Length: 207
Length: 135
Image 1: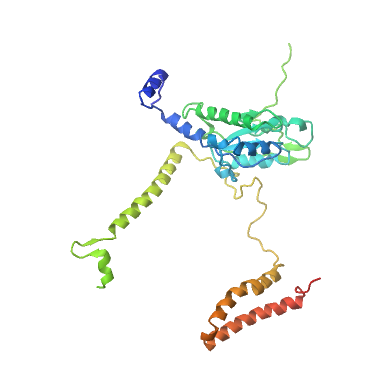
Image 2: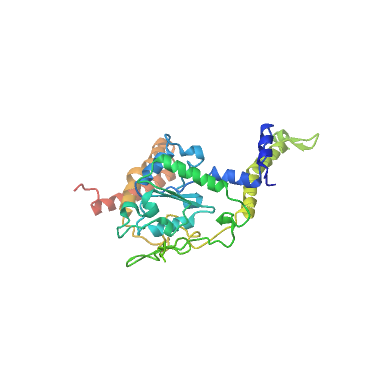
C-alpha cells in the first residue's frame, strides 16, 4: 500500500512502527547496491579510483564493488576522454550491462569532449550515444564531485516509481534493449549521434 | 548382519539413526536454494529480460569476436614442452622411483627404465636441435 500521509508515517515512526511500501523497499535496495563497471578511459579514472579508496570511501554508498564484467554491473562511469575509436566499445559495453543500468558522464571530456572538443578524433560527449543520468563537470572532477553525482543518482533511483508511465526503462517492455553501436567511417563515426538519445541543439531564430 | 550396521540402524525402534543428518542436509539445501528460487521468481515478475545481439555476445570486453575460438595453432613451442618434461616434471617420478628402488620388482624396474628411455629420446632430440647450446 502506498503511504501517502507522510505525517502519519512520521508519527508512527516515533512510536516505533516503521511503515514502508514495496516501491520504497525495492528502490532502497537498488540505490544502495549500485555496482559500477570497472573501466577508465583517461585521467578522470584516477579520481574515480581515489573515490573508491579508503580516503573517500565509495563503499559507504554500497558501490565499492567495481565489476570487471559488464554482466554484473549496474552503473557505467564514463571517466575520461572518449575517442572516436573507443566510442563503439563503450556503447557495446553499455549494451552488455544488465538492466537496470545507469550512466554517469564524469568530467568535461565525457560530457562534451572537453579540451579536445575541437580535435578530429574525440567524441563530443558520450550523451550522443548513451542516455546519461548524471553529468559531472570538472577537469578532472574531484572525488567529492563523483560522490555528489553518486548521491544524485541514488536520489534519482529512489524517486523512480515501479508502475505508471514514469517507471524505469527496464520495466517498460517496449523500451529498446540495446542502443545502436556507431561504426568508424572515413570521416568519423557513423552515425554521428543516436537520434533516439540526442538531437543537435537548434538555434532559435529571432523573428 | 555386521556390527557396523547396528551403529546407524536401531533394530528395536526401526529408526535409522542417520535420519536427522538427512533432515539437516535437506534443511541446508533448502536454505541455499530458496533464496535462489525467490530471486528467480522476483526477476521473472519485476525485471523482464531484454536480450539483444550485443548482450548475448560471448565476449564481454566491448570488442566483437572476429573468428571462431577453436582454431589450429602452430606448435612451435613444443621443444620447450619437451625440455620442461625432462628437467622439471621428471623429478616428480624419479623421487618415488629412487625411494622404493630396492623393493621394486623386475617388471616395475623395466617399466621405469622404458619411461626414462622416452625422456632420454627427448633429450637427444633437443640436443640434436642445438637448444642446449648457449649462444
